[in-house]
Image (cartoon, rainbow, N blue to C red; front, side):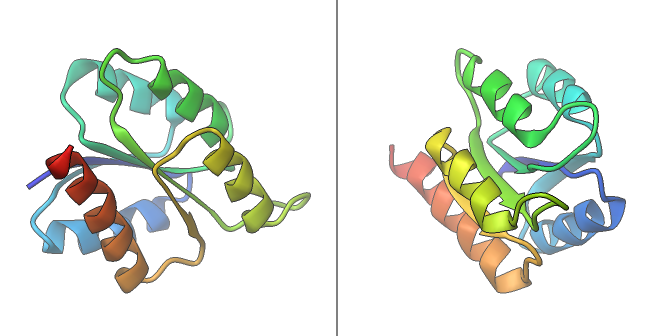
Length: 127
């Protein structure tokens, strides 16, 4: 199947997403830091990055910008539950304007994450 990188500063979120996607046969790599995600993408082939928006050190917007600079960028799914200052829908609207392939509002469930991943990866297979 596909290689998927999950980036979220909440370790429990990365673990849940990892379990859901591994059960579907994907190879999943997790990190809690955007800068680490960039190192992973630079060192191996990643088909899809699933990133949170609100993270310390490097937020999801910065990560998305950096991923788009790659010569062969991976597909991107952005997810967010919001922050103290903005709700998740507002944050994801900005991500959509940044040309991510799909957005997911937290809390996510297995059906929505699996459907989003299948949709984005099947678009890659038909391209």
